[in-house]
Length: 177
Image (cartoon, rainbow, N blue to C red; front, side):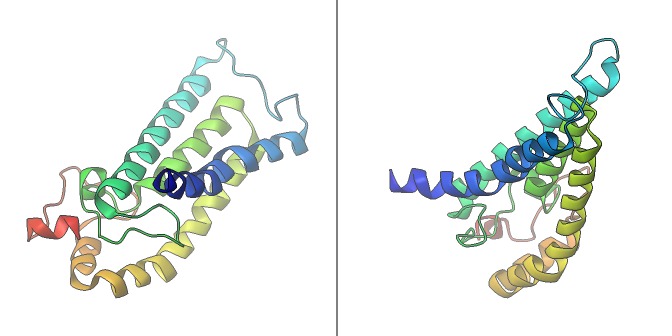
């Protein structure tokens, strides 16, 4: 049970805060309608379908990355309890930050689905903040913790836009470090 709560607390504290609590507060504050935006409409299916697709992709990325952190990284998504091993499996062989990409997809999807400018602004701010934070702090910390394995990973796997073919680490055993 302790392991369960170790994993659930960061999920409640981070992705739920960023994708549900803050957007709900923004929608309530903007008061354009009951939802702070327009209701999804089948009369304009493109934004609705795009929003639903982005949310689906985002949820898939977040769930898969959390699972990889738990199973192979022996840690959580939280900065206070990071993975103890470098995870270079699954989606992490295509892109370095699939969890943040997933959250950004959810935010852009919600802004399209609800046609809410406040959510679009929040998505842009969240992405910009992470674009500054990741290279300045997180990547330096990962380089200190995982050394050459992370340096090789960072040199071969892009931060945001996935590579078409999965990167194969030179030493297949390094994928579990």
